[in-house]
Image (cartoon, rainbow, N blue to C red; front, side, top):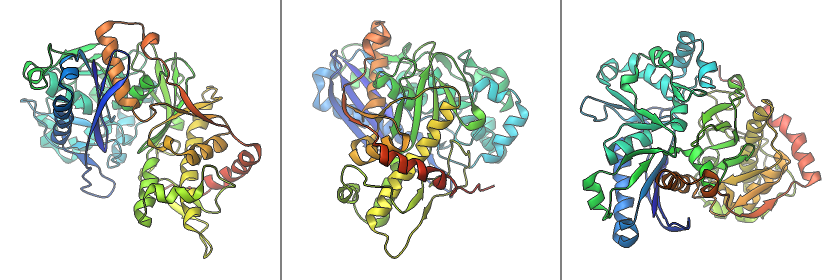
Length: 481
């Protein structure tokens, strides 16, 4: 038996997986985000630990026999958030999250201090990453920075509590701007640019490698017969890739979660940081992921649902399973700024083309289309690097919607496939990494792709209509600086 623990932004999800890769049970515990100022986003690491323990306590209560047989634990989590620890390994402040935009000025400072940043990390400095956040803390909270003895990313802090070990995997470390992504090692030059050294960083491992064991007292608390091994694990998107078997070059997938992304595994790095292509190490050796990422995807549907006072299901039901034509309304999904391709933390969303005749359904369809158009931007910057994307799998909560996947297929003009178990990707991928760390099996034999349960193919007339609309949609963006 294996556990996969995914520390998301809105919830911790823990699943119990058997040797046949069946999900025996799952538990979820909600998290909240603190917003001290507009554009900021923080969480108290103590709430993560409480949520993780709550899910494991529940599994122990309801599935004691299966929990007793757990051999390995895999961790995945939201990327980019640094946890600053003092000499006693206690957090010094709340974690600044991936969608926090306060450190835009520090990005300019960091690139000036470290001219080789883009060539070394494969990424442009952006506020979402960890390193600019440390510069902001050094400038605005110098006493906190001075007291920092260890910097861990989100799931590595969970590992520290579970095992007592300070270890990070290379995929999550890729989102820090301190990693040399080709060498898969910390960059001393990059650390120095933010006033840090290796002594303040965790040991690095591959995602499928052993990275500590569960503490004795916690092994007893959850009734396990022996101390489970804890795998290196992965950031949420690399873990999602493992969960759907995206372990070969070209196995492109699209995430429609709170945020969104178009992600392709590659065997060598062809970075394009100037166009905001993200380059991360994969959770398996000698592989990388290249991605275009957007900050608001599924959260846009949640926003319009709250605004209109109706559930998402109520909003989508009148629209059916496919669009008849593009909506007359246009929507920019930049509710929290945007990454690819603009790197603009201050830009905000927009609804355009409204009239007295505008219906609720037209607005809702426009929201889905706006996210799809933004994902087209992500796809295009990837193809600019030479990647070929003839089809894609879709995962995340948004992949439940036939309408959304039909829109996406026509906007991108490629087949989009829905996967079985497409919503458990990150936690399931973490459980697979735990199994690999325990058994040493071949990666391809464990990381098999789930069945495709539906395929949404573009329709020539509708795809042409969206192709005509896309350049007009792009004209709606106005840089905020």
